[in-house]
Image 1 (cartoon, rainbow, N blue to C red):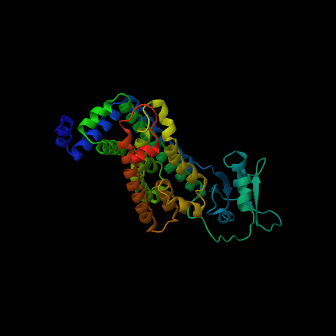
Image 2 (tube, helix red, strand yellow; image 1 turned 90 degrees about the horizontal axis):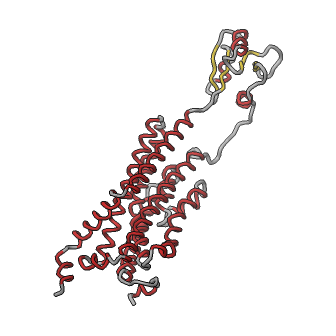
Image 3 (tube, rainbow, N blue to C red; image 1 turned 30 degrees about the vertical axis):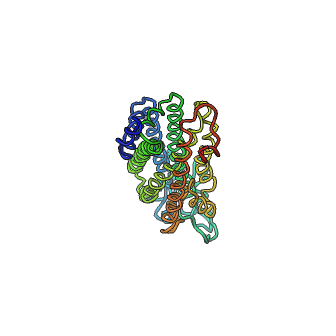
Amino acid sequence: MSTATTQTGALSASSGIFLVAEREIGSKLRSKAFLISTGILLLIALAGVLIGGFMSKNTSETKIAVTSETAQAVHGLPGLAPTEVADATAAEKLVRDGTVEAALVPASGDSSFGYEIVALKSAPNSLQSLLAKTPKVTILEPDTTNPLLRYLVAIGFGVVFLMAASTFGATMAQSVVEEKSTRVVELLLAAIPARVLLAGKVIGNTVLAMAQILLLAAIAVVGLIVTGQNGVLQGLGSPLVWFAVFFLFGFVLLASLFAAAASLVSRQEDIGSTTMPITMLVMAPYVLVIIFNDNPLVMTILSYIPFSAPVAMPVRLFVGEAQWWEPLASLVILLAACVAAILVAAKIYENSLLRMGARVKLSEALSGR
């Protein structure tokens, strides 16, 4: 029995996977570039949540003076900050000294409204529009959430998925080609099988990606609490958990494909040509979910496609458009796709890893010729 065979037999598959995963995690954590970029990403995420929260709370209100006769006319109207005074004379005084922008006082003459607006130079448009008479409005299909909030949530899930998947997928692809071009992979394969090496790489990068996702989720929760957005936080609870679950298996699927695609080439400059289709699969969810976030039919279809489900399904859960069983059905489809991708990627990886020089054709990698 050869030395290589003895070494392979001496190292179990689980031990080999653990060692490779530990090596992948350790190399990233020792990289200053990785730590700095992660820190910047977390700071940007925190700043985005805080700025969005403070802006939503910092709504400009029109200060007006009202009397006891007109106070009821503006009660509960958004965008107004009424100050009740004794009479019309007191209200006019507040307008003249600039304490309020306008006053709503009882009408001095004939008026169908029964009150009038008093302003120094011009009446605030916001006050006039709120007091304008409008017909009764009946909404047949009311939005379950604010359209802007729906759009921001779609962007948030899309950006996180895009950045994490593309960043870790690309670095893993570079690692595969680097090991191949320097022939380090020959030493590694003398100790462990190619499938074990692939599994270790995928697991190591998945751990790092999930850690980043959990940190971003924690920062989002803290930011929402600090800015007092408890309603948004309550609505995001379940979608965030599902996003983490979908991201876990979605990333395993993409990471396997990234590693397999990288094993087809031996030079760093050739990585782009083989990983471009996978990069497009990563970008598609980000683009499609943002564009069609308000289209229930398209979002339903996207939530069952493995490459877009990690983004589309959490968004649908947040806006209340998904039934309780839908994320479970989508997850089953994603798991099946994940298993299929791993099997195909393992075959390509195993058949291409030791082939140097020209790019290996996909048909040859799949057939082993």
